[in-house]
Image 1 (tube, rainbow, N blue to C red):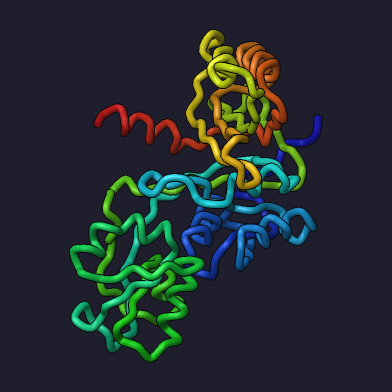
Image 2: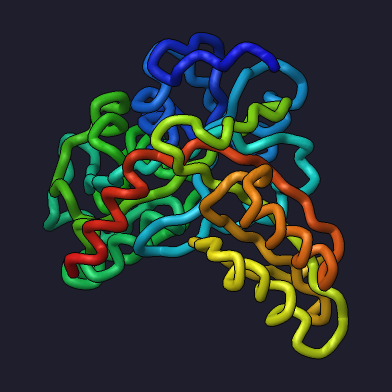
Length: 298
């Protein structure tokens, strides 16, 4: 058995993320891996490619948000990336409205940011009568505002981005929901599957599959998870190749593939599905349990 990978707090090397310095992905990198060197990348494809080529040891990629839902494109990129999920991280996202030092809420008319951030602040923007303008990422939007000479334009980004690009904070915590949290997955170019008894025993297994074209195929494919007592925490579908007839499914379950309940469930899944691909088995973030408890109290 290979030596265990270093704990996130002590791991060194380079970790790639999509966005510019000050992006929420940048913050997620430094929070989970404080000793690693963040590498800014223009696109998700670039971040994944740097890991594939060995330029970076890991990539920190957002996959879903508690307010705006899944992050577009990621599900399509994962199957062909040739990478493996080795961890997860939940980052509480706090959005800041910022503009040039000479601007104010009275002068600002338009707001630049990533589509996800704009969606997470929809009510606030409507209340302030501000027009959302989608851009590639949050920190990049802050840089564009800093480089402009226009006091009618603002950006939604992190407080760190405001500091980096010398912008004035007009309003903090403008997200519509206080639970606004983004889940990130950590990817590597080699599998680093957790042991079944690692940590507190909670392992997350992520896989993708395509059901066979037979009646009730999805119902039958998922039946094994119910009968074997496997908790499925995420199931999403997305279309393949622009067709409305072929759907790929992305799923997260609690358990390790070598444990009997999940092993049996995956065998039953394979009988009614094709292209079953396990993307990783990794320790659940401590935040997963906390967020679940919080949701149960609502």
